[in-house]
Length: 336
Image (tube, rainbow, N blue to C red; front, side, top):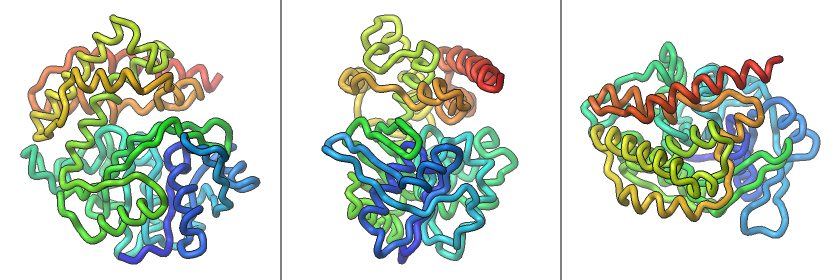
């Protein structure tokens, strides 16, 4: 796999951060472009894209090709999605326009992805398509799960102003093929990330990483949106702390029933979470910005896959009902 052109499709907080790192490292050798929209797009066009890293004294700024119309770009060697799960389906045609023979698509994950069961040997549900995540099978048909490289991002990021992104920690990225193969393409993409200064590793069990991250996201994201609380506030409140633990146990039970393995206990995960700091989750960021919330991949699929695996998820069901209504009311207020 030779990579001479890269498009970051969805250059928000995390996608934009990756775009800056790649463009600042490979700008002379690789064509890096972004698909963005609104005020963020206009700011990138006018002043470039800036990244404040957690351990840096000054931001990195890059001038980069930016568009809201992917058909204006040529076919790409590599696409990296920075979109949330509910934004992927409507973008299927746009991503398809950027494909050519051999194009790989790195899907940066939050929650369960649409391709989850492609070449899955762990769950007994290989090639099961998830209509909740891919209505009508558009992504499966137009992009194709065979092109996907999964990417679990453990990186806090926020668009603090249009065209300006801030990272809250020194994060890491885990890449893996849905098949579990340690392929040449996987190693090529991981090497690209590493040379751009990203902390990256590869795994033959990307689904384990998906469930590990979801253990936290399925609890903290909706609770933070419902309460407007920062991570430190959630962990300091005994009732919320208890609820986080219950949701984490439900997520682990569903993941385990589908073949996932977990490296640490829930108690250890909770103790890790105490050290995250006063961070606003991505769902809280979207709520405060009046944007649609990423509910189905993070919470809805815990409930849906719990039913598939015959695992009860009573607390997650309550949280799902509450945050779904919150999203409806928030969207109604945003359009007034």
